Length: 510
Ligand SMILES: Cc1ncc(COP(=O)(O)O)c(C=O)c1O
Image (cartoon, rainbow, N blue to C red; front, side):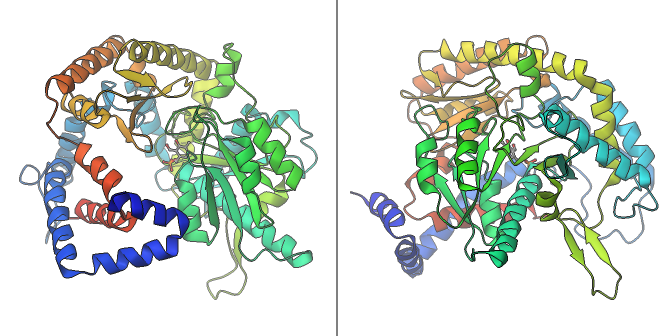
């Protein structure tokens, strides 16, 4: 076994000893110097691609002594936006922009412009903001099966809040479970070390939950079909578990976890179950109506006690909103923050931020009511037809195979070519796809952008050529291939974490 193998084994057997071994190794001056050299080389290559405007656009590392003319500022902003537009408008990006139609954007912009000063923190000044948010939550809840339960009973009502995005929705749901367990613990038994059990494929926001909220995240390997393994999840539950999580669908492979079975395990144990429908919340209800075989995933499943659904993805709102939903007002109240002793006054806040962009809620509400059921149904029809065409096209390429059984987030891997090099060749052709790892794969999340004429054909043609190029130039290394290669072979995860932090540093260099 090589060093990487030994380190990986150590990490599995005893993460504390592995971390200590890493610290010792990395503190050896020669090792440190070599790592720093390698970091610098790799980051220098990346810096050029993430900082293309150096020397090409006005730059302000400090405030201009005199404010610029507004026209001049607008010129700069418009020039940069125009340069970036083809990257997302033409359907070359995975996910990222989910609607992107000119008229739709102009409409959202108009709503934003009308409401740009609104802050829902001041409900007295802007009761319109709370109206919009209450209706966003209610429309999302009814779409996700909330109308099937007794809506007069606060214990069974599906309620929620608007948040800034999928990550915040997940953070808040997990905080609610943690705090509910603490409150229950005071009454009965103590949970001092709350745990959440989730499949390895559930969104990385859960690792952020662990990082921020002192919750232990127990990751459980998925089955051969990339869906959660129900028996393994059941075995991972302990007396400290406060919630289980499943996805509909998962970010990496676009497959839907067996939500009914997982939620039943949670219900048996008297703990929460969260369906992360950030990606699928605004697609799957319509897919079902269109006759696709969609397994139960929402509040129609009795054990589902919370959900996240992103309005800023397939809800076609502007970026910056999502919805977190709960079964019952009591569970939601564990999300809230209140302060009664602050000299600044009595304070309460439903979500993580204090002041919030009410204009984004207004634009979200506008997007939802302007799209309507017929609009979502039609958008979903187009997206799923495009997803099927892309999936079939990839399956027809002998070097690639589609992972799992996806509808519109299509992940592919290869047993014969380096899939990261295929990704690099696609990038050179203007595509912005997502690199995945464990296992090495690439995905395309289909949006309305890809449903435009010619996009599927271009994607499949470019993919075919990219695979051929990789086959004909077998030794070249490019793009993310060395980064993922490094991540796969570096014995210690801390070194990879270090590299990622250095990358963020690069992003913040003016
Ligand atoms: C399944 C799933 N959950 C959560 C998230 C996090 O959403 P956000 O990036 O809006 O925080 C994503 C993002 O793609 C997702 O696909």
